[in-house]
Image 1 (tube, rainbow, N blue to C red):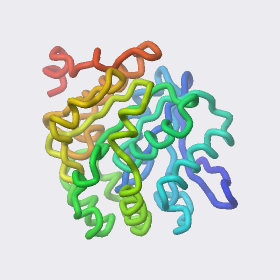
Image 2: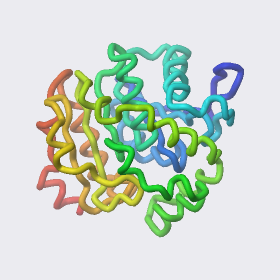
Image 3: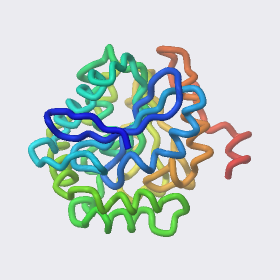
Length: 262
């Protein structure tokens, strides 16, 4: 286990591979651990980092640090401590919010963002996230799904207050504006059968600028990287391979590998 000390508390992270840096940010249920297959796939060409945010996994639990901005500061401190320069960010639900907020606050540090299960409107977030324990949420979204065991097991380490605090904090953010104001490539990914975050309405998606693109995984729920790992990893590879500043609208779930991995 790799760890460093930030503000006198432990922050856990793991790293694989060599090359340009990618930071993977987990969501409300689970920890860095469910990123392992994606990190392994990316590590052939990139240096892949995944860290546990405040209140999750093996990082310290401290209720004063459970706001979105504190999680953003954690990422900023992590990059400074590790000496990491410009990055690609890959975030899932809470991690996607943190990634986009970080890109909004520190645009010169971020090359591109993939945001999975990002709620473009607060009304799209299922109220069950506020009503159930992390373990109950993990079983609801992942029970019986091959590859989901790690996230369910790690859910027991989540401080429920970290979920509740960030959900409450979201109401202060302009979620759609975070995407519209970006001037770097942003790829939004949703599972068609997502239980936790409803796919944004068509009229909302129609407002996206040329820097943003939206792709739906037809056979996935809230965890496309677990439900359809081969397709997800191929899409991530294609997204990372785009030239700097190139629009992600050039990306599609190509038919030749949709059929191969269906």
